[in-house]
Image (cartoon, rainbow, N blue to C red):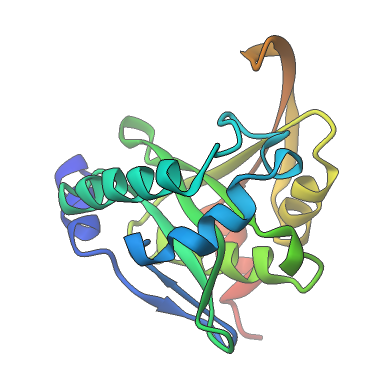
Length: 196
């Protein structure tokens, strides 16, 4: 996958739909929805960022994201629950390794909407886009030690556990162990696209 073609695809962020969800660009109008979960410490406990202190901070973040979208430099979708027309989280690519044709994915769901299968539903579509539209060879996801809910999403979608980098990340004043799961394109296609 050439870097230029990846950037071109994301300059006009594709809209992806499932029966329950719409994955689309985040907008400044999503400020209240995003702040509802981004202000919570239990949401950010296993993430690299800290809780948003106020709605103004969230609004500035979304304004910054708009610039990144326009430049083709942001690869995360807002996850909208179609029945409520409400953004309940985000899901997308956090980074690309173009030399090795791979990417890392991440996701966040508002705790009020957890337990309904929204994270795996959104992530499946992101992975489908990665393998079929971007022709990736490998997609991985990482989670901090203790984030069992995130690991369950990875397991549900057929990602294989590959190991732990012990105390490898210093975040929020402490060293955290980081676990990695991944799936390869042939494994994904066999699991989701082969019809017998």
